Image 1 (cartoon, one colour):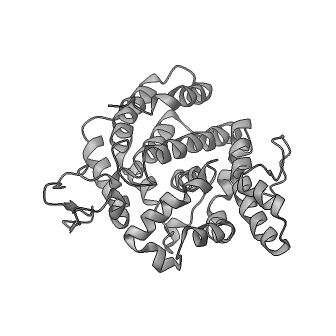
Image 2: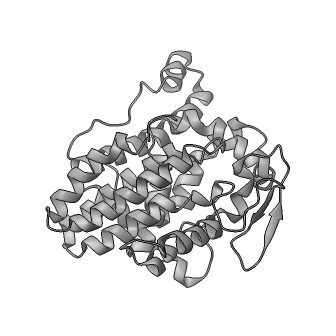
Image 3: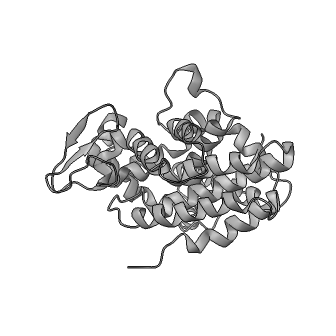
Amino acid sequence: MSQNLFKSVESRLWESYSTMFGCTALSYWQSFTTLANEIISYLQGTDAPYHNADHTLQVMLVGQTILAGRYLQHHDLTPQDWLNAMVALLCHDIGYVKGICPGDNKTINHFVTGQGDGWVALSSRSTDASLTPYHVSRSQRFVRHRLAEQSLADVDVVVDCIEHTRFPVPPESKYQTTNDLPGLCRAADLLGQLSDSDYLKKLSSLFCEFAETGTNTALGYKSVADLRANYPHFYWYVVYPFIQAALRYLAVTAQGREVIARLFTNVYLVELEQSLSETGSAGLKQQAASQKVLPFCLTDNLGYGL
């Protein structure tokens, strides 16, 4: 079996955690790392094209950076808060993995939905992405079962944070908060995806998941090109209203400003492509496609207009 990918980010997470809380709350860190090694190993086994271990690691890193900025600005987070949020981010997509929940039967391809006693029968040819409509509830089901065994995390808080990663965001008022732990976890999920320096390259994998579940048809996407073309609109009109608090916390640290830079580079590149399609500048189009054109430098005074 390949090396657990969690090892590739563990030192970065520890550096941030220890800066926030020192070495006096090691039990929370140890509880997290024990669970993280287990969960990431499960996610490494998924055949979902996009929602895999790499995506979860990206989300955790961005989430940790958001929490660090929040802590530096307000000093209102405890090690317990940190653990609850990070466990939620670690487990928010574990529901994609077939066989992960009590009641799953991979032999006959029957899987629980996580909602009551519901279950769904899937084709033997389907990937884990076929569980997209149920993955949030399945993740919550897994968390309640797994954390009941051994964890310092508050299961109810973790489940609530995972609930806020539902997308599209439900219209009920409880989902509109953006500055509490659940709201910041949602922001980490969105920003972990959209600020990935390889995100535009991964759109083909995301489109494969959409196509498997019919989401592409519901959204009007006929190709990866359609998904890419809609990216700026998706960011500004769908995502941005829910991440403004998180962006302010990211702006507090150098690592957070790098996240912001990657995010707006991705948005800018697609906006540039669309602008150049009207001007016909082949040279700049090639630069944009190769991601060599950056909208700004990585300085302490980024003009992202919060």
